[in-house]
Image (cartoon, rainbow over all chains, first blue to last red; front, side, top):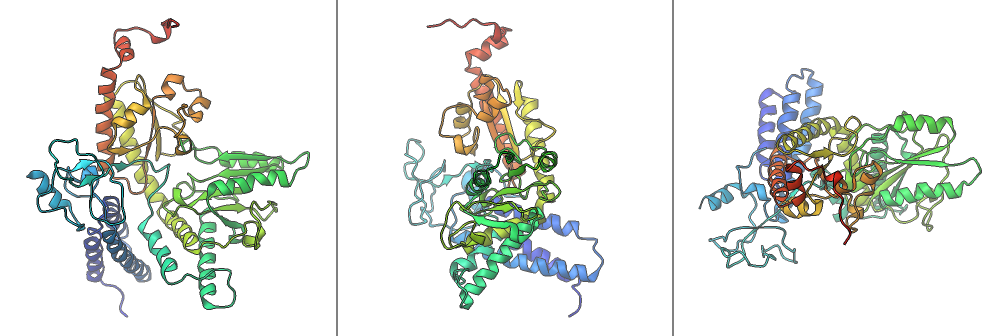
Length: 91
Length: 406
């Protein structure tokens, strides 16, 4: 299989962010979005294709975790936090 | 109107709706009953809400008491609560083997976080049980020259970091066993049992974004540290802790340790920045605020502040939209001021005014800012009502007052 291209990495990044925004718990949602942005930013200059593939594989696994946990969170969701009412949801 | 629009924008999950026209949301916590339908347990004394509206939960700033599960931890645990339910000590079938494999993988994850060998990790029900096992060792190996030093790595009330490596060095040279309760430190600051010459260490799952009800005790093998089992039975965990090892819980502990190892540096940097923000913003807006604990040897996520001329309990109750504590959860039922603050020589009146702010992996800048804003607002308000504060403003030295006996 060819090494992950820039487009594939970006697709993965967008998919992870999109999924993370669906966490119903404020703290999980903000953490996931923030952590994904910071992790992709931190690794943006990695050149070694083997390392890139390792990171991409880990990200794919994490995307699976996020999907499942978002779903579970929605099944057991509860009330919003006091600050969610005041401002727009952001990291 | 604006409220409802903002609510709709912020809503992600759909819970059972109370109806299209939502009443004004109230603050607090609702008592969860079996179903998930929003039903407010808050008495309707607010005139604007004749029918129960949604309840807004307080922010969580009490991570020293306990931490939320990291989603990665729950994800690791669930398979063992659903399909892989075998007893890890069953030797004769695949259910047992897969459960045992998971248990040993978790053991390796815990060991790796503290630089230990997996054979030196015994799973327990938590740091308290681990402490008891470690201390009991003293009674088991009683000799005139044997003793045990037991130190908390990071204090849970004021966040002070003890000089573990130095203490370890001294103990090792004097042939004294060294135990540390690392519940608040594991996964947050780098720990290595060999570098720091630690012989026994207690680990708690629910302090590091893992599940409650599980922990571990590290027991050095070289040179061998002998411990006596607290509970006897089927001889599990090398005879040191009988009882079926709860695979889902230990898998959670292992996952929490692995995540902590990966995230330690990132979390520490973020938490330090947030702590700095909280302390600076409070101190620049309020006079007479004291931070308890040595600022140089301090874990940033545990901030203990004393607000002079304000009663700690009143401030806690005023800050009802933020989950906080004054002193440790294990002593919160008693009315006495913190034994830790008393031990570091804090004045009696300042000890009664202390609040502990906990910043963790999931704490946001918004939560810190909100907490700071409310804290400043309520401290100012409470001080306005305080006759002591009024006297201080008039320039009276409180220490010079002779209080009359009634």
